Figure 1 (tube, rainbow, N blue to C red):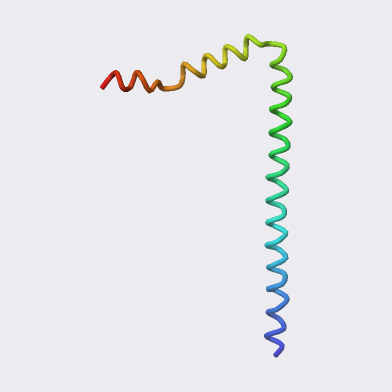
Figure 2: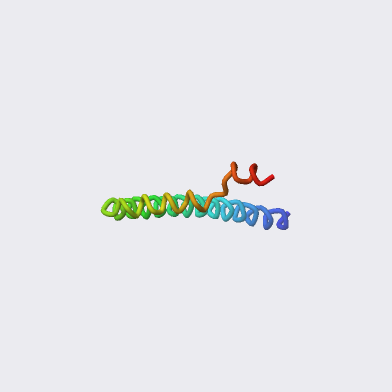
Length: 75
């Protein structure tokens, strides 16, 4: 009977450890999301003073995208 009692607390300990680990993972995801949001807001705030950089990065992004029309025309 003592063998049964010895196994029960370790299962409870394992469950508590798993719950704690899941809570820590959720907490870290939440923290990363908050940090990412704060960084994006800071970057947007800094870029407001330089609208030409926003336009230039937008145009650069458009040029980097593959064009569907040019691929179809090449066939």
